[in-house]
Image (cartoon, rainbow, N blue to C red):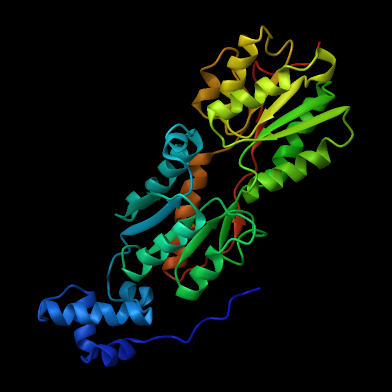
Length: 342
């Protein structure tokens, strides 16, 4: 359900509240000389109280550059710093920002409430021209917030999660189904998935797809984690400590760092990959080609994904054609870590 917009506040309203002319408001927000600091502060206070910010369209038409794009990420810094997906995604975003002489304003937040506050502060303070929203959850509050503010954004997530915002996404359900079918075609009948954070929307989509695809198997397990290598190792250990007849013969991971950790755990437990257990990673970063054996993966162009998100955001900002659309679905890249079970 689309949120009902609040009545539009204009520059005239801000001027009246501050007791100045519209021209003075324009001077203040364009950082032009001709106003005392006291008058400038009074104008900014009036604008904050009324929830007003200059029209992005008007600034663009006036020749101003949209030179900063926001990205807030609700992940621990220690996890984000090791996560190849985000590094590749950000590099793709940056490749397009460079073409526009723009910069990325990146902020790590602790929770969704903090992100909502950060995004609103960025927009009202004219620190950004638009924002990229990631890691959508059920009943995500950011859709209503951005619609209320009139803030240009692109949502990275399936349209069922993003509340009507312009969205770019990968087809996680199809990719998970392909992964399970591939392992089943090799002969695996006991397959596990080491998934990401359970509250994330894309994790829920993958979980549902795995349940459906693995429904006819003799055994299927799913374990939620925080995407870290430590959590991936613990999950793998818990799956492989069962008796041989009761443990999975293949494991699918939601990211590469957990798959690498899983490979180490298998070696620690004296299990051979892929003879005793097959392992399938997700994003196909460089990590997958540096292990022994090399990791099979659901491969997709994460750098290209980031670039496409940035291009779509600039279309939203400038009022061009910007429709929600998927990027290419991840495809299976078999390597040395998957084989028929013994």
